[in-house]
Image (cartoon, rainbow, N blue to C red; front, side, top):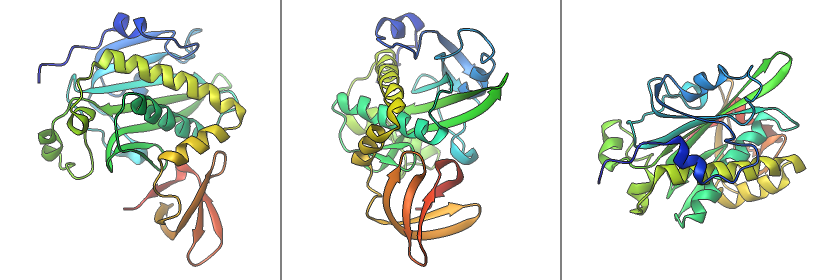
Length: 263
């Protein structure tokens, strides 16, 4: 495989059709994490919708402090800064996962799934992780949506970091030629569309999320505050979270920020 072309702000911008997301774009070589960087811009007047891309993260992280592994020029690593409207963090995470899945489906990438709350999988292996963080700045709530997508990595990379059974890249799973600049723009277009869809209360997002999910109707184990819950996943609620019928108790709701699924 040839060396992937570097990310280029002008090339990404040339494919955008967004109303809000990506009105301002930054592309950086190396950062600690794109979420860390993007918070530095929250006080600026044109910060809403800002996107920061990086070729490499030295301290990339996922949900619950998990490390994100990457190699320069082989991933799409970016964050979006959003001034909060009526959407909450959980719904924003669901919308982000749906936007990624729908974008990849539009490229005819097969076997797409979403694992609660917002991991995107191909044939059961993770290709995309999403981390939503929130802060109040000058009495205004803000969100940073960090997204990492494995694009060009070969299987040998995942073997080296001991993730061959659980993670993959778009190229390895599909054998499709992929231009990261075009893919970046397509993703931002999809995110722009689905963030707008959240304004109706999130039912469209929840319905689309469920089409990609394989946990609904199946047994599930959840870790919340160091306590394990076992039950059957019944549904998701766009506001209250995952709906689970506990095996030894009532129906319970689990918020994405407070729980994790145990394999």
